[in-house]
Image (cartoon, rainbow, N blue to C red; front, side, top):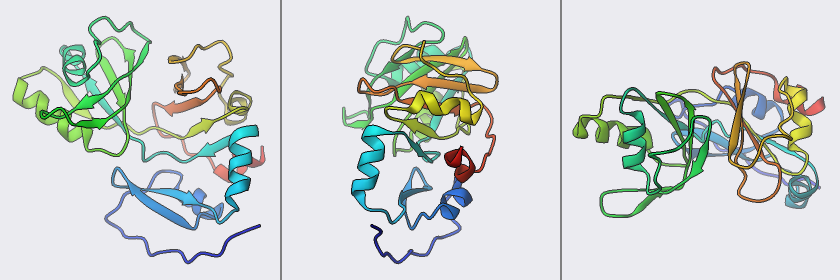
Length: 219
């Protein structure tokens, strides 16, 4: 069963992920603006089909709109620890942590995963919030010796069969990787960051390497 929908016009001042054209070709009919980027939210399918794929199979999402704030430099750990509500002062190299980030009034801004991929670098994988601007302003005001920017990353593989799909996109399985752990495979960083017991794998490429989503799904 499919649903009929009118695709709303898109505008040039909103960013598009490297996979935007592929999601449109795959039938995306509705998008939302998330972190100043279009994110597909409907392909016109019956929600029951989506639910079944989510709970019994695997879903490949273009979540390029879920951005990263990269903090690099001698004070990277100190700034990441300052921003987060969780103690990151002893976060091991290669480890990940769930945390909250609040504004100066204590209001929760986002609930990200913080990754420590390299000795002088921390990544904050966040939701719909201008965290890079917030972190950069905090760094300038606090005189932290860091650079703060936004690297490009790739999509999300989620749910029951996620680890089985990774080889299709050229990445080794992550069956040996624990929850909230990451491994570096070539130029890809694979993170198991699901909040549930399902083997969610979030594939983050250190460089954006575009592959056609329909071809991947067909594989």
